[in-house]
Amino acid sequence: MVLILYAFTASASRKTIDHRSIQKNTQSHVLASVYVKMVLLDSIVTERGYQDIYGKNMLHVKVTNPCNADSSRFDGLLSHIEVQLKNNKGKTSVTYKHPHPQMSLIQFIQEEIHIKDLGGRKAAIVPFYYCGGYESYDMKVSYIVLYENKSYIFHLDYYCGEGVECKPVRTLQATLKNLPKDIRTYLIRYLTKKHRSRDSFHQE
Image 1 (cartoon, one colour):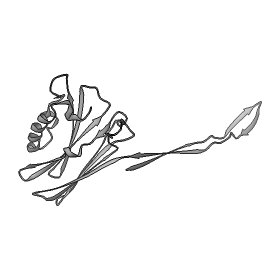
Image 2 (cartoon, one colour):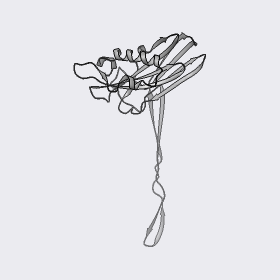
Image 3 (tube, one colour):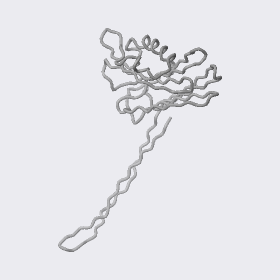
Image 4 (cartoon, helix red, strand yellow):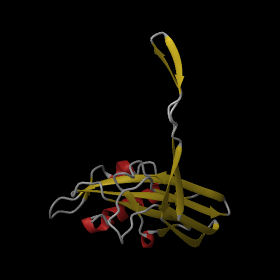
């Protein structure tokens, strides 16, 4: 849980008044006050360990101020996700701060994290979604991928028409072009099957 404090100070200043060529210094009533607002933010933390050719890997994911399935709150002051991977080769980390938390918050489904074995080297794949702030036919999902001690993040927009399969607005080949070939090939197949229906975006 994160605690944020906001402080606001208000005060009046001294003014000089010239009235009938006679200067008088007047001190207005000074009101100085501090207003402190405390905001409590929930967070989700999960860890996953796995082995590959690099030895033991420890994946750590923290989401600050995510959507709360038990309430109707879909916006806030901030919302971000931090992902970190540690192994014998070192540490890799990435943080994504949602640029428009006033419109929607990050929605995180822990069970959808998965580890893919690619010839002895494993990729950690962390999806996250959004709640609120989008039209009924527009769906959005983002992925963080950690592979060979490098991090990648990409955002996918989908259009889900009435009675038809959801389709990416931009081709997956174009969106994933900067990923290594083996993980890119796998993700194109995986995403094509994964996000065919509106339900797969957890947005309703």
